[in-house]
Structures are given as C-alpha cells and as structure tokens.
Image 1: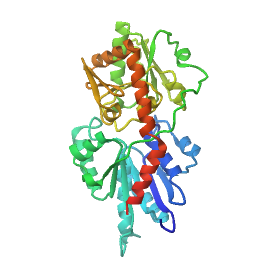
Image 2 (image 1 turned 30 degrees about the horizontal axis):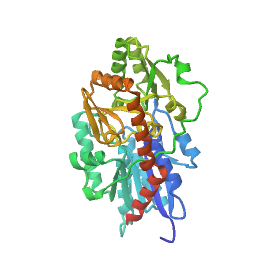
Image 3 (image 1 turned 135 degrees about the vertical axis):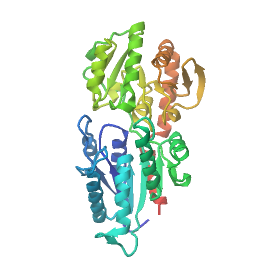
Amino acid sequence: MADRPKRIVRIIARLNVGGPARHVVWLTSKLHEPEFESTLIAGTVPPGEEDMSYFAEENGVEPIYLAELSRELSPKDIISVVKIFRELRRLRPDIVHTHTAKAGAVGRTAAFLYKYLTFGTLVGRPRKVRKVHTFHGHVFHSYYGSFKTRIFILIEKLLAKTTDRIIVISDQQLDEIAGKFKIGRREQFTVIPLGIEPIEKSVVSKTSLREEFSIPEDRLIAGFVGRLTEIKNLDLLLETAALCNKDGVPIHFVVVGDGHLRESLERRSAELNLSNISFAGNRKEIGPILSELDLFVLTSRNEGTPLSMIEAMAASVPVVSTAVGGVVDLAGRIEKQEDGFEIAERAVLVPTFDPADFQKSLLYLLKSEKVRETLGLRSAQFVDERYSVTRLVSDVAQLYRDVE
C-alpha cells in the first residue's frame, strides 16, 4: 500500500431522493483512512425533488456543493467544469469517480483537463489520475426524443475513450450499454451490484397506512416507492388502479414519494374518480412503509437496478414490475408463463405496458397467498446474500486497488 492514502474524489450531480445519493454517501463515508481518503462533490437539487443532504450529514459526510451543477444541460455546465477542475487541482486525487450521466460528463471533462492542463497550459507530464464512472441507469431510451438520445450516446462513446474503468450495476445493464449501444470496450466494464443497509420491518410508525388513508382491512396494499417522474411511468399505475376500481378488485394502491408530476397525477386520479389510490408523499423511514405492504409495484419504462425494489425484496415484499433493465436480473429465471405476465424466481414480470396485463398479474398474486410467501422468502434470501453495503464497499475498494 502507498505511504499515503489513495485520494478519491467522487462526483454526483445532486443528492436527491433515490439510490445513487445513498450509494455515493455510503462509499464516501466507508472508504476512508488508512487506505483511502474520500471527498464528495455534489450539485444542487432542483425544485420539486427532495434533498437528501441530511443523509450525508447523518453519515458524517460533508460534500463540496456546487450551485451550478444540476441535472439538466445548461450553459452553467462550463462553470461546473471550471470549478471541479479547481477542486481537483486543490485535492490532487488519484482517482476521480463520477456517478450518473450529468456528473459523468462534467466530471470526466474536468478530470481530463486536470490530467493535461495547469494554469491553462499543457503540463510537462500528464498527471497520474484515473477516471472511473458508474452508470446507475442510462438515458439511452424512454427519456428523450431520438435526436437528443443519439447525441447523448455519442457523448458517452467519446467519454468512454477517456475513462479507465466503467461500472454497471447489473448484467442486463452491461448488455445494453456495452452491447446494444456500443459504448466503451467490454474489458473496461465491471459489474458491481448495489448495496443496501438492512431494512428493519419491525419499525412501528405512529400512524399506519391503513389508518391514515382509511384502507379497509379486506384490501391488500400495493405500494410504489420512488420519484414521481416520467420514466417511472405512473400513468400505467393509475390506469391499472382504474381497472381494479372498475372491476372491484380488493387492492389499494399507495404512492410513496414526491416529484414534479405529483400534482398532475393527483389531478388525473381525481378525474378518474379513483377511491383505491392514495398519495403518501415522501417518508424519511422506509421500514414502517414496507412493513405494511402486501405487494410492491413498479411500472417504469427504464431502470438501472432500482434500490426501492431491492429494499422491498429485502423486506420480503413480493414484487410486480414491468420487465425493464436491471429489474430482470433481480427477478431471476422465468419459471412460468401466464397470459400477459411471467412468474420469475423472485418477482412477477409484466413484459408490456398494458394496464390489463398489469392487472392480471396483480389478480394472480391476490388469489395466491402461497406464491406471495414464496416470492417474499426467495427475495429476502437473495438480497441478503448479494446486496449488502459491506459487499458494495469491498467491491469498489478492490476496483480502486486494481486501477493503476
């Protein structure tokens, strides 16, 4: 090991509610001296999204915040590059590790400049700094139009040429990014699954969901947990709820989370006269929520590896999800084909975006308590074996050792 700790500068666009924010905070707090010295640089959280800076504080992490660094493309990105470049010159990192698309573009550009420039001129000898990037998901389909998507793919192909190692969080994501979209070389990639801290289902909330939203005892509770954004495809959830409402299916849907679509979703729910759906907003503690769910539902059009689904699985809550991205890896091998959906080892998958098919999958689980129990037990065991924070930190530490 070197005489001094290996310096790591980790960069993310924003610490908003979601898996990536927790991921970077865990890595920053746990990869410390004597072997590592970690610094986190983060941007600002836009209006309509909940700020998770409290999570960094709880874990003893004090990020360097850059007001100009945010999610959307902006002329301020140039300022972000300059400010990150200055921080890199001050911190003199051995490794710059970027997370998510926006920080990946801005951070790797700054790292490239840091490697070759000083005071606006070429350095006599390139600095020895390595660049690592983690794809928590990707924006190569279902986010933007075809032209904008092609631009993003081109940018990522160029950035990959300047990157030493690329981390993806599932085999499915590796196949998509390196295979389908031809970004980078296979030998650049390492699959490192996400990690989570144990979910305490025994945590008791002051007011139960049933009491808070007057949910009858004879109804199962199906919960969605996440940001209320376009990619989560919550229109499908509302349309499925409308079908269940019409057909008298005894399931009540609870939407946990917030985002810029909340008002429009609540308005649409009222227009559809849905008495079987409630919007719970953000909840700081997920344990009490998971303890009351009978089902976890996910309707996304694209996913990396959803941390909310992993947490539900850890809490033995059976999952019904669209068959997208890393969800497929979490679900496991398909064991049975049904009309409109599939029964996998650890979840029920819906390969279409048809609300009728989603409703069929819910009805199937509604009628079979044994299947729900089996999926829950298998899921909890799978997560316990593969998705611990300890394993995540160990894997990333080893990758840092290997990047020389």
